[in-house]
Length: 517
Figure 1 (tube, rainbow, N blue to C red):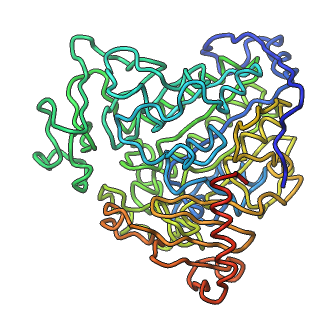
Figure 2 (cartoon, rainbow, N blue to C red; figure 1 turned 180 degrees about the vertical axis):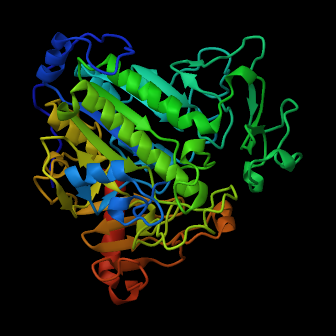
């Protein structure tokens, strides 16, 4: 197995940021030359939410078109066995930014008022890149907690992204279906009126805003009990909130606002190396695409949100092309976990899915243990540097940390990114051999991939909220073993036929948890 770089001497190339520009092209030939002669590559991670393996055209989508993503796939490395570390968003985001499994920090789906999960001082991908002269930014959904608990949204909200390596952040503080329903730029709520302070509670009702239970007639579409508290913009959310009226977001504006912030960051830093973690809200619930995307698929809001997500991706690439820096920018397109149709809101995602298979040939999706939970569309594109290819290498998003470090010749300290491996040649399409073993986390159990074998450990207890959702999550009171080479849909449990292999793989899971890969 490839080892991460720990001793190479790092070379820093630090150029001054020019500040936000309103121009869509370099302002002079001198700036163009500066951009062209930049040595270290820009790094962009386009991190989509709840996008399944089969949800884009290049991976077989039906009922929706994704020309911008398909273009990346046609011009880069298209992975068929790439994984998020977890079947849910918080652990996956934690793993991508730290290079270690979420279980090492008890990472789980966080409530809207959770403290910052990645504590200041923890080595992260953005802090590594910042040390190497990169400008760093996160734009979009965060869901990694903020502050130290009991956040006062009317003052500086910290620690947050700026305390763990990002120079700039523009966030949904938690998720679209949780309060507070405001944008947070760096440390402060955007457009907050100090005379209308925000109060948020996940324990009791605050203020007199209508809820989904008391005023269902105000809803754009209905929701389950979990998502039936404070109504904002015609959508009931989790949690109770009052105040901050001028700061409230409109869901339909997410695509334009987040894209503008991402593009402005790129423009401001076109003459120095930058890292952009563009964390989409789409296609997470509530799915409320802009009016211009409605009806663009045959699958209702979920399909239309995929179209919107594709547009966002295209706008980022077009900006790189306009600035003349697309040939010095590596783009990674992927998702935080597998697909989910009904996840709290009744938006007809199940009824309108038609012949489309969100997880492709793979069973299951978000929350669960089957392959569809973590096997996600993953594309690496770098104009002129990567030759188009399809790769069946078993690889994880955690491996981006060590691979980016290798790319820019940055050393990793002992213990840093302990679950990440340098597979730069794999991400560049030069090799198709990556991991032999990979743990897949879910909310109820742990799975292990070993080549084409897949072991799902027995689940000690299925969480009640998962049982209530009646999803195909793959939790059982017995171990399950599948041979994915002839059973990609995980239909035939052959654990009883291979007891020694089951025992070996169970022991391997414990070894990895204790000692790493």
